[in-house]
Length: 401
Image 1 (cartoon, helix red, strand yellow):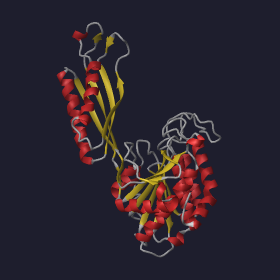
Image 2 (tube, helix red, strand yellow):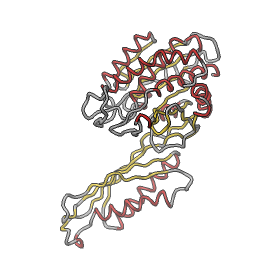
Image 3 (tube, helix red, strand yellow):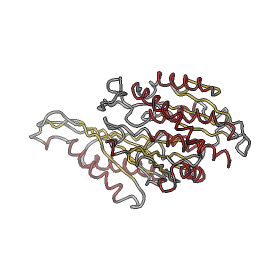
Image 4 (spheres, one colour):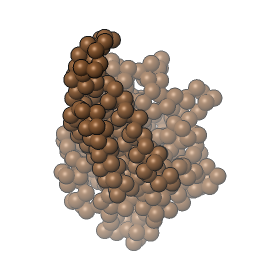
């Protein structure tokens, strides 16, 4: 870790063992979305011990917020910066053989949210110690249910962007596809919108040897699956990213029986609001057209999910400058936009902000398994890199606010 500010580097080194211990405790005790009761209690206890102000719990069931008020001078006086971390785990059975292995069968921190929570607690500690270096207020936000159904919007609906009014937001994510010691940050769209749909095809079942007396929903579903891809390959501008993936096709139980119904479930990814609406319209029209042409009825249900995660250029420049200070210019990356989705996007729709990525991949230690894999784990040196960059970005924000 480079960190030009020697005081910050030494402070991070001093607290890092405690941050690692917090991360491992959280990893051992994972909880699913809106069930993070013990996680939230742990977070609130840590915040109280740090002496932060106005700790509020039970927001959108298990969300927590708190305030760190700067005591320094500068243009940031009167401004509030929100820093967000997600807390929830995934319904995955852990396969790692480590001392801090999950103690809850079928539940695992397989995406790094334990790291995000531990890093925000570490960031809170350093901001408390460095309050004289900035004016303004930091709102710490620990969010439930990022993995689904989404905790950001319920927290916003509960008023977390008010009292005090939030002016900007920062968040980060461990990135297992990125080398250890790097920071990835890009302006504009960084992560895709995540939408989806379900199709129920209603045909007429019968004997598999007498297809002429049926309306086969399996054959119709197969036509739909293939045709859906043309909405991207033939109707979408080739330089406009979009993905349509049918991940589930359910029909029948016997080889010689044509069922009455078939069900398709799909995910749709894109970066532009207009494109989201166009895709929804065209996908439904295509599905209904094929079903009608093949004598079936169809139920089509479309769901708009998380919007795209779009970084504000000015906030991105602040994070890039902070990352250059903490890891060195040669280790600051501008990754391509990814088709994964994040409900940090709801905060960035409301206020300017930046969501950046902390490299955690270390093949020398075998820490290469990707997010949502039963063997996901990362090099904990990344925790220090994330904290250093977040603290430096916070101070830069208030210095130039």
